[in-house]
Image (cartoon, rainbow, N blue to C red; front, side, top):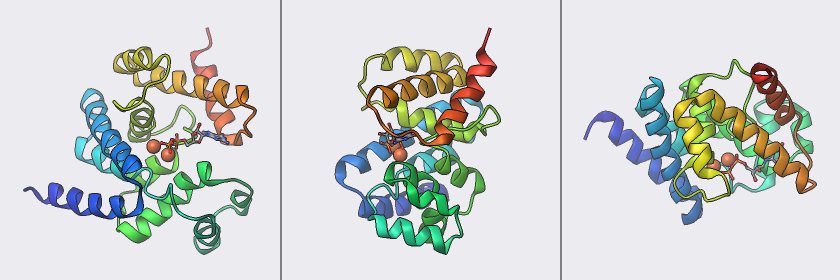
Length: 194
Ligand code: GDP
Ligand code: FE
Ligand code: FE
């Protein structure tokens, strides 16, 4: 085994200890899909596989853990007004660095941005994890095939497709929408406006 494969196996054990089997399997599929998108987009596939593996590491933590971490890592106190859907990326990145010892800033940023996306300056690795989370082979929503095809042709078009559909979905269901979800959408809508 290469040194990287050993690291990946060690991290897999730690991720699986934090998650239900279903969510752990999702992380493995995101890791695989991120590797594929990395190959297609000239990004280090090992870095993408590791980022995909850990992206939901914190998803099942109790709210108290997130609230304590917001203080401990001096994150924006406004985060306390949100919920696990938002915390597990932005606060989760700090937990991943602290508890898994992953220090690669590109991986930590990709985890931070994986739920809301970011503006058009979003790093390529973050786009890859964002799309792999949406498109992994276990996902089955109307349009997933089209979304995969669009993303294979253009990672950026895929990012916009996801932002557009997630925003519509959240609004249709009357969910509260995090401001960054809106600003990401606007940035990409402007970019692709005729
Ligand atoms: P998952 O962790 O693999 O389930 O995927 P994500 O991290 O992308 O998303 C977590 C959940 O947060 C999903 O149910 C999204 O629809 C939801 N979500 C994404 N953006 C927002 C937002 O702005 N507000 C709220 N309330 N939920 C959001
Ligand atoms: Fe997530
Ligand atoms: Fe996920």
